[in-house]
Image (cartoon, rainbow, N blue to C red; front, side, top):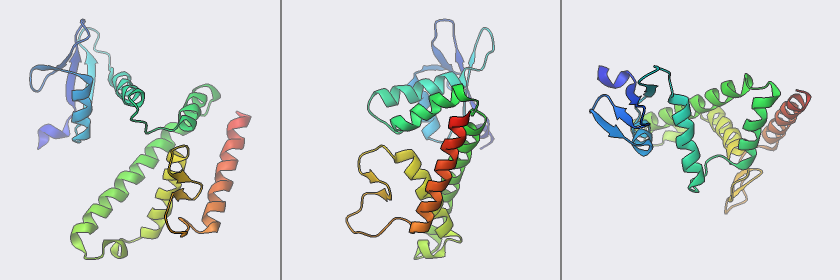
Length: 185
Protein backbone atom coordinates (compact mmCIF):
# COMPACT_ATOMS: atom_id res chain seq x y z
CA UNK A 1 0.00 0.00 0.00
CA UNK A 2 2.84 2.41 0.85
CA UNK A 3 4.30 1.74 -2.59
CA UNK A 4 1.31 3.31 -4.37
CA UNK A 5 1.39 6.41 -2.14
CA UNK A 6 4.67 7.67 -3.57
CA UNK A 7 4.81 8.78 -7.20
CA UNK A 8 5.79 6.29 -9.86
CA UNK A 9 9.25 7.41 -11.00
CA UNK A 10 9.79 7.51 -14.75
CA UNK A 11 13.25 8.39 -16.02
CA UNK A 12 13.84 9.93 -19.43
CA UNK A 13 17.04 8.80 -21.07
CA UNK A 14 19.08 10.88 -23.54
CA UNK A 15 17.43 8.89 -26.34
CA UNK A 16 14.11 10.36 -25.05
CA UNK A 17 12.90 6.89 -24.09
CA UNK A 18 10.93 6.69 -20.87
CA UNK A 19 11.93 4.08 -18.28
CA UNK A 20 9.60 2.82 -15.53
CA UNK A 21 11.81 2.33 -12.48
CA UNK A 22 9.23 0.12 -10.76
CA UNK A 23 8.94 -2.52 -13.47
CA UNK A 24 12.33 -1.95 -15.13
CA UNK A 25 10.92 -1.53 -18.61
CA UNK A 26 10.32 1.20 -21.17
CA UNK A 27 6.94 2.90 -21.34
CA UNK A 28 5.06 5.14 -23.75
CA UNK A 29 3.01 8.26 -23.14
CA UNK A 30 -0.12 6.12 -23.39
CA UNK A 31 1.24 3.83 -20.66
CA UNK A 32 1.82 6.87 -18.44
CA UNK A 33 -1.72 8.09 -19.15
CA UNK A 34 -2.96 4.64 -18.11
CA UNK A 35 -1.08 4.81 -14.80
CA UNK A 36 -2.67 8.18 -14.09
CA UNK A 37 -6.16 6.91 -14.98
CA UNK A 38 -5.59 4.08 -12.48
CA UNK A 39 -4.96 6.69 -9.79
CA UNK A 40 -1.16 6.64 -9.66
CA UNK A 41 0.84 9.82 -9.25
CA UNK A 42 3.68 9.98 -11.76
CA UNK A 43 6.96 11.88 -11.69
CA UNK A 44 9.07 12.09 -14.84
CA UNK A 45 12.69 13.20 -14.48
CA UNK A 46 15.57 13.64 -16.89
CA UNK A 47 18.19 11.02 -16.03
CA UNK A 48 21.18 13.23 -16.81
CA UNK A 49 20.13 16.63 -15.40
CA UNK A 50 17.59 15.50 -12.80
CA UNK A 51 15.10 18.10 -14.08
CA UNK A 52 11.44 17.38 -13.35
CA UNK A 53 9.70 16.95 -16.73
CA UNK A 54 6.30 15.87 -15.38
CA UNK A 55 4.38 19.01 -16.46
CA UNK A 56 5.86 18.87 -19.96
CA UNK A 57 4.82 15.25 -20.48
CA UNK A 58 1.36 15.67 -18.93
CA UNK A 59 0.73 18.61 -21.27
CA UNK A 60 1.91 16.46 -24.17
CA UNK A 61 -0.54 13.69 -23.19
CA UNK A 62 -3.41 16.22 -23.06
CA UNK A 63 -2.36 17.71 -26.43
CA UNK A 64 -2.26 14.26 -28.07
CA UNK A 65 -5.72 13.36 -26.78
CA UNK A 66 -7.11 16.72 -27.93
CA UNK A 67 -5.55 16.31 -31.39
CA UNK A 68 -7.07 12.81 -31.74
CA UNK A 69 -10.55 14.27 -31.41
CA UNK A 70 -10.94 13.30 -27.75
CA UNK A 71 -11.75 16.92 -26.96
CA UNK A 72 -12.43 17.74 -23.34
CA UNK A 73 -11.47 21.40 -23.44
CA UNK A 74 -13.67 23.67 -25.56
CA UNK A 75 -11.87 26.19 -27.78
CA UNK A 76 -13.11 29.05 -25.58
CA UNK A 77 -11.42 27.51 -22.53
CA UNK A 78 -8.17 26.92 -24.44
CA UNK A 79 -8.28 30.51 -25.68
CA UNK A 80 -8.77 31.78 -22.14
CA UNK A 81 -5.84 29.67 -20.97
CA UNK A 82 -3.59 31.18 -23.63
CA UNK A 83 -4.76 34.67 -22.64
CA UNK A 84 -4.06 33.97 -18.98
CA UNK A 85 -0.36 33.45 -19.77
CA UNK A 86 -0.06 36.95 -21.19
CA UNK A 87 -2.45 38.90 -18.99
CA UNK A 88 -1.05 38.57 -15.49
CA UNK A 89 -4.04 36.45 -14.45
CA UNK A 90 -1.96 33.28 -14.38
CA UNK A 91 -1.97 33.36 -10.57
CA UNK A 92 -5.78 33.03 -10.51
CA UNK A 93 -6.18 30.36 -13.19
CA UNK A 94 -4.26 27.52 -11.46
CA UNK A 95 -6.14 28.10 -8.22
CA UNK A 96 -9.49 28.14 -10.04
CA UNK A 97 -8.73 24.96 -11.96
CA UNK A 98 -7.34 23.16 -8.92
CA UNK A 99 -10.33 24.05 -6.74
CA UNK A 100 -12.79 23.14 -9.51
CA UNK A 101 -11.27 19.70 -10.01
CA UNK A 102 -10.97 19.17 -6.25
CA UNK A 103 -14.67 20.00 -5.91
CA UNK A 104 -15.46 17.53 -8.69
CA UNK A 105 -13.37 14.77 -7.05
CA UNK A 106 -14.95 15.39 -3.64
CA UNK A 107 -18.49 15.34 -4.96
CA UNK A 108 -17.82 12.18 -6.97
CA UNK A 109 -16.36 10.55 -3.89
CA UNK A 110 -19.36 11.53 -1.75
CA UNK A 111 -21.74 10.28 -4.41
CA UNK A 112 -19.96 6.92 -4.58
CA UNK A 113 -20.01 6.57 -0.79
CA UNK A 114 -23.72 7.28 -0.68
CA UNK A 115 -24.54 4.99 -3.59
CA UNK A 116 -23.43 2.06 -1.49
CA UNK A 117 -24.79 3.32 1.83
CA UNK A 118 -28.36 4.40 1.09
CA UNK A 119 -31.24 3.15 -1.07
CA UNK A 120 -31.91 6.68 -2.37
CA UNK A 121 -28.44 8.25 -2.53
CA UNK A 122 -29.48 11.66 -3.87
CA UNK A 123 -31.74 12.42 -0.95
CA UNK A 124 -29.16 11.30 1.60
CA UNK A 125 -26.20 13.42 0.47
CA UNK A 126 -25.73 16.34 2.89
CA UNK A 127 -25.51 19.57 0.92
CA UNK A 128 -26.42 17.82 -2.32
CA UNK A 129 -28.20 20.87 -3.72
CA UNK A 130 -25.15 23.11 -3.21
CA UNK A 131 -22.87 20.52 -4.81
CA UNK A 132 -25.26 20.14 -7.74
CA UNK A 133 -25.29 23.90 -8.34
CA UNK A 134 -21.49 24.09 -8.17
CA UNK A 135 -21.14 21.18 -10.58
CA UNK A 136 -23.61 22.75 -13.01
CA UNK A 137 -21.69 26.03 -12.97
CA UNK A 138 -18.41 24.17 -13.50
CA UNK A 139 -19.80 21.99 -16.29
CA UNK A 140 -21.42 24.99 -17.94
CA UNK A 141 -18.04 26.71 -18.04
CA UNK A 142 -16.14 23.63 -19.19
CA UNK A 143 -18.71 22.38 -21.70
CA UNK A 144 -19.99 25.70 -23.03
CA UNK A 145 -18.89 25.20 -26.62
CA UNK A 146 -19.67 21.51 -26.92
CA UNK A 147 -22.58 20.10 -28.92
CA UNK A 148 -25.54 19.03 -26.79
CA UNK A 149 -25.03 21.80 -24.24
CA UNK A 150 -26.98 25.00 -24.02
CA UNK A 151 -27.01 28.00 -21.70
CA UNK A 152 -28.86 26.13 -18.95
CA UNK A 153 -26.72 22.97 -18.99
CA UNK A 154 -27.06 19.71 -20.89
CA UNK A 155 -29.74 19.54 -23.53
CA UNK A 156 -32.81 17.86 -22.06
CA UNK A 157 -35.82 16.23 -23.54
CA UNK A 158 -38.09 17.81 -20.96
CA UNK A 159 -38.30 21.54 -20.30
CA UNK A 160 -37.08 21.35 -16.69
CA UNK A 161 -34.51 24.10 -16.12
CA UNK A 162 -31.08 22.96 -14.88
CA UNK A 163 -30.93 25.70 -12.23
CA UNK A 164 -33.16 28.37 -10.81
CA UNK A 165 -33.17 31.64 -12.80
CA UNK A 166 -31.62 33.48 -9.83
CA UNK A 167 -28.70 31.04 -9.79
CA UNK A 168 -28.09 31.51 -13.50
CA UNK A 169 -28.28 35.28 -13.09
CA UNK A 170 -25.72 35.12 -10.27
CA UNK A 171 -23.40 32.98 -12.38
CA UNK A 172 -23.75 35.35 -15.33
CA UNK A 173 -23.01 38.31 -13.08
CA UNK A 174 -19.91 36.65 -11.67
CA UNK A 175 -18.73 35.72 -15.15
CA UNK A 176 -19.24 39.29 -16.38
CA UNK A 177 -17.24 40.61 -13.41
CA UNK A 178 -14.39 38.20 -14.16
CA UNK A 179 -14.42 39.20 -17.83
CA UNK A 180 -14.17 42.87 -16.84
CA UNK A 181 -11.22 42.13 -14.57
CA UNK A 182 -9.53 40.13 -17.32
CA UNK A 183 -10.02 42.87 -19.89
CA UNK A 184 -8.52 45.45 -17.50
CA UNK A 185 -5.42 43.31 -17.08
